[in-house]
Image (cartoon, rainbow, N blue to C red; front, side):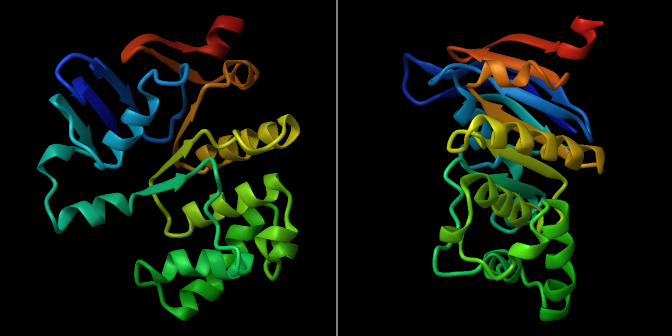
Length: 226
């Protein structure tokens, strides 16, 4: 479980990026975090990745206070998180297979595990026939699915997708969100950060809205539609 307890993040003395934010995300939930540019969404993800620390309050993940993670425990914590970026961040000179293998080798996975895992990952994201393709040979939607397969490669508990639909068209955006929803049903906790409010309305998920650093709404769309 993820819990923010009265979290404030200050980058200067006068303007909080987040102010007194409290929320809980249960294991296996799918949550959209929405808000305009500059609302504080990026700060929230940086806090979750422990790229920065809260100025006030506490963030607790699986019973551990993030502010107390040290030099040796922080990398272990970050392995629990698969991160999907807006701009894909694939290596152009590597094939799809090699991009995913690189991420696995970075945390010590051996050849046997890599060979066994990658076909399964590509099946999950419906790219079984694309293993030997280079990113330049794929559509934007396919590249983002490779990035998602890479995020899943080390079996993280949490998937955080930061504006994952920002560089793909509406059709592929909807396909990607549907895929993330399926991954959530497999037991992963999925957090999708986006400013595209219209997109989230059709998926019947929990939506947390942040505005000017404040949590202003926390609702479940499916409950509203019933």
